[in-house]
Structures are given as C-alpha cells and as structure tokens.
Length: 275
Ligand SMILES: [Zn+2]
Ligand SMILES: [Zn+2]
Ligand SMILES: [Zn+2]
Image 1 (cartoon, rainbow, N blue to C red):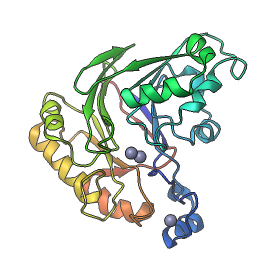
Image 2 (image 1 turned 90 degrees about the horizontal axis):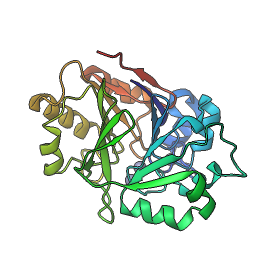
Image 3 (image 1 turned 180 degrees about the vertical axis):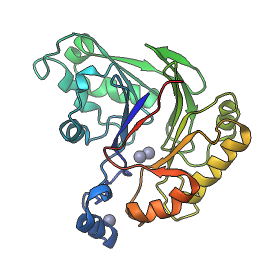
Image 4 (image 1 turned 135 degrees about the vertical axis):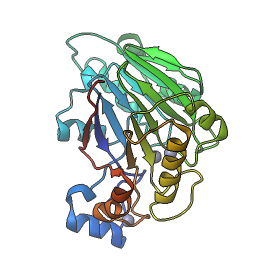
C-alpha cells in the first residue's frame, strides 16, 4: 500500500490564507516542510480521501492523475475537506476522460446533501455517483474494505474516520477527530492496524476535544498498543497542523520522533510493503 500526503494543514493552511502571525511568518521564511496545504491523501493510485480547496494545486505539484481516482471518501463537510463544486470539472466539457468510468463519492448525509445541491445534472448523469455511508457499517469498494467510525468533531453532522484495508494492509485515517468516542474504541478493538494517521491540530495544547494535539496523539497511540489494535511495527503519523499550535516541522519532529510518531508533510510518501 502506498500513501501520498497531498496536504497536512488545518482549515486555514499554514501560512494561513489571511494571517500575519509570527508562526505564519516563520513558516514563510523557512519554507520547505513548513508550507502546508489543506489535508488529503491518495492511497495507491485509485483512492482519495477528502477533496480540499487545494486539490488543483495538489494535482500540479505532485503530478497526480486525478482521473485515475475511482473512489473518493469524505470524512466530513468542513470547507478544508470538501469543496464539492470541483467535481463538476470532471464532466464534459471540462474533462475528457479516456476510460469513461464514474467516480464514486462516499460520505455522510450532510456530504450527500451538499453534493445534490451543487452537482449539475450532467455531472450526476455522466461522471459522479454518490453513496451515503453510516458509522460502523463496513462496505466494499473495489479491492478495499472500509469501516467508517464516528469521530469526536462537529456535532452538526456525523463526522467520520475510516479503517481501510486493501486486502494486504490496514490503516486508520483518523481525522478530523478529538479523543475517539467509546463506541469507536470498542469497534477498533477488532482491528490490527499497520498504519494510523492522527489529528494533531492542537499542537502543544493538551486539549483533546474536537481535535487532538501532541499529548492526545501519544495517549491514543499508547491506548492502541495496550489494546493490541497496534503493535511496535505499526506506523504512526500525525497531521492536520495549525499555525495556532506554533510548532514548525522540526520542532514537531523534536517532540514526536522520539516517541516513534512521524510528522507528516506535504508530498510525503509512505510505502508499506505487502506481507
Ligand atoms: Zn479539518
Ligand atoms: Zn498565522
Ligand atoms: Zn473539521
């Protein structure tokens, strides 16, 4: 399984769109891994998670062929994860596709509602299908088996995190989320994860509701190992960083690397070899 991190920032990006704070200025000065766009990953070459407003930038920065994406999983409808208007660009006359395959978008009720509001008749008839998913109800999509779990995030919708298996390896895409709800922990107990991606928006703050920070990530990691959901071989990754957390890439690494947690950056690729 291959995972490409397209973006690793919280909703405002880092440097943030309109911000002049010291942390944004430091990121601009140092550049490199400190420049973070809105969060998304591509798994193998056919599965994408979330559709942030920076998707076009991701396409041209990493030479990604988005026409090869068959499955799009949406975690929740916040603007940094979901810019549904973009999907109209997948239909004629905006896109000429060689294989004529549909893209299927999976998401909660709110995502479904927003898609129906913005997708044109043409897009729905020729290019994009929608499937509503519910927490704790596993489903198949191509070679993948996916289990949506409930996050601790915006209470106005069922925000989801996903356990995804490609038949070889199993990962948890764990954001946006604060400390996982009890029912999510209970369901996680049945899995053996090869890789876990955690929400680290709050940086050095101990707050673990709505989003987590370093402390929450380390506690959640410890809990997973204790439960046997993860082991010493499991790869742990923190992402979705905010300028309000203040720690630049190297400073985050200073805190997380000794604890065996990778700090994600835009363009990072993780290859997990088959068993
Ligand atoms: Zn977010
Ligand atoms: Zn800022
Ligand atoms: Zn969110």
